[in-house]
Amino acid sequence: MPPSLSLLAATFLVVASMLGSGILTTSGSILGLVKSPNAAMAVWLIAGIHAVLGAYCYGIISRRVPENGGEASILRAFFAPAMGEIAGWVSFIVGFAASNAASAIGFGAYLLKAFPATAPLGKGAALSAILLVTLLHSVSGAIGIRIQTGLAMLKFCMLGGLAVWGLGHVPALALAEPVSAAVSAAPFGPAWGLAVMFSMFAYLGWSAAIYSTAETRDAKRNVPRAMLLGTTIVLTLYLGVNLALLRHIPLSELASEKAVMELLVRKLFGQEAAVVFAGVVAFALLSSLGASAFLGPRVLDTMLDWYRPKPALGGPSGEAQKLGVRAPVPASLVWLQAGLSMAMIVSGTFEQILTVTGFLLGIFPMLAVLGLYSVKANLVEQVSKFAKWFAAPVFLAGSLLILILAATESPKEMAIATALILLIFLLRRQANAEPLLAPPPSK
Image 1 (spheres, rainbow, N blue to C red):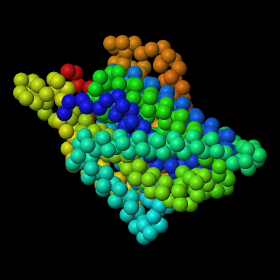
Image 2: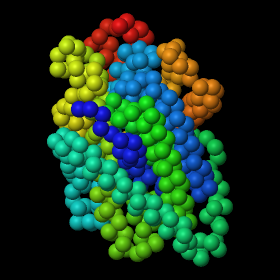
Image 3: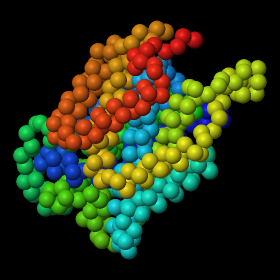
């Protein structure tokens, strides 16, 4: 099909990818790690700036690698085919299937708040959400994208309205009692690293537009704009929402709660409104599941496309390829991702999924941004000095520091993440004897 995503659709694809279970569930965990409200706000700001810098760097990359596939295509183009394949599998399994599992668990938590009678379902609610969204994207195509964009707008408007109302209606008690803001922050160290990683999970999705570059109209202009616009919008929203949370909810109550937005609505509007809000949030969370169901299979399809026979340029398929028309992504890949997500929901906890995902998704964006210093990235046009000497170094240094600190705090999850990369590498090497750093075949 020809490129069909507009700037608006690509921007809200980014917004939908970011507005998932992270902002709805991690604020309490972050506060529990860093202790102080001021420190918690600093964590959200640090992770937001990190995401904006990443979006800026990826915008430059997207003009040099105008393909679907994200890090898989980037590392293949800048470094070696094997690195692209490993990144692609990690992205597919962890970046989309695992984050989908986390969002589905978040869906289940909010659904339970709205409908306590669903408690006997347990993880069945999360599994049902995966099935519903997968069915939608496997059979509906463009209609699924429109529904997903609408749900993303709904979720954005709800959270934005909640932030504005919460900031504009601060109780007199909160104004007169600055004690919570004066709570000492945890010393800078491993806990801060894990807190920033949790916040980065909430920002996960800032690069979403790059996974569907080949399906975006005027991609060289719209993909970078979509990533920067979407990330900046979400950064502003997250700061507002968290400030409202911290001004209305006692620290002891917030630090032990996962469905934090339902708690905020209960404080502002009462129990009945909180029940309605939780139900609407659960429904809107389907947009995040939809974003992953749309993007993840495109990573795997791009990798498979590297090995499919290329059509003759004179035939119908060859002419379509020249015009930039891609075949639809097979529904089987959408269902494969769904199966992986469901297996993770059954076998893991929310915190384990969150931490392992954070580790793995911190590594490959670093490698992709390092590609800006490669010869291939500078062949046609030099990467700007601002990107080379500020944006990329700050992004890389921040990513590395966060990974080191978080690994110190959660060595078990770091070991699981490392083992997964090694497993994919060994399986890939067994299937193909090509060494990891072998150059791409010459055209």
